[in-house]
Image 1 (cartoon, rainbow, N blue to C red):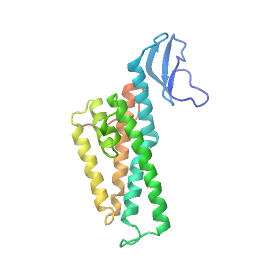
Image 2 (cartoon, rainbow, N blue to C red; image 1 turned 90 degrees about the vertical axis):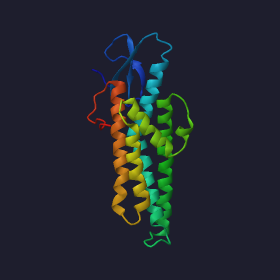
Image 3 (cartoon, one colour; image 1 turned 120 degrees about the horizontal axis):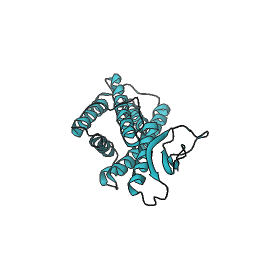
Image 4 (cartoon, helix red, strand yellow; image 1 turned 180 degrees about the vertical axis):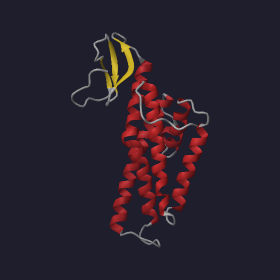
Length: 207
């Protein structure tokens, strides 16, 4: 596209910056290939696509980091809670635990909306923290044409269980949530690229 807004504008439908008689989606960072002609008053499918773009952008920008950083904080603080063999100061543990729980809530909400947009409706799995993350993983792989959504879900689950159960004795396992968050971001960016037609340097791993 030849024109970029000079001030931040929210993602949405705007007149095509090239002067064509159509609407084009601005995803918050760049113009996409998603368009519809002027006068198209009932684009339910493209409207759903725009909602999905917004949901994916939330996850890429902060949802993935919030969910998995929150999990890391909560597990680490509980592993070193006052009274455990290697306790942290009570004030620090309590403050960090509250921060972790807040991040988990934010991240889980982002995943809930992501599942809702991929499914096209609210489901029970979209509303259950943890399960919505795994469901989202499977849905993204399926949407991208991956061969084995269950393989990705199983790998993520194994990494997170290993971290949760061994964090007290193996602090280096703190990299596990970071790896899962990085993987989610790569897949989400790949799906965004497919939907909007915008090239991205991040590609989804083969599945």
